[in-house]
Amino acid sequence: MERSIYKRSDIVSQIEISPTGHFFAAAGKSGKIKLWSLITDEKMMELDHKKSIVSIAISDTGDYLASAAKDSVIIWNISE
Image (cartoon, rainbow, N blue to C red; front, side, top):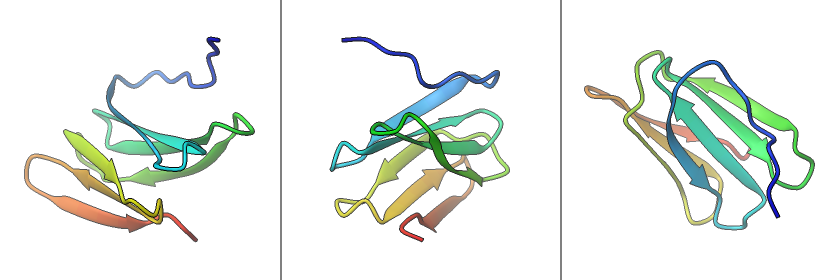
């Protein structure tokens, strides 16, 4: 089954699905990270690293997301 729930004008450079499979995060060159529910197909939150993102990772619990740019790493609490 295929469905399209995520559309944006920014170039997506990274995508990560949560360990639970309930949501995914997509990040791009703009520094924006968007979290989307795979259950409701709705945007859950948006984060701004403010620099072009080269990598993202979600913790095993799904409570934290790490985003990395060329010169910085931010750990986000996404459980709130």
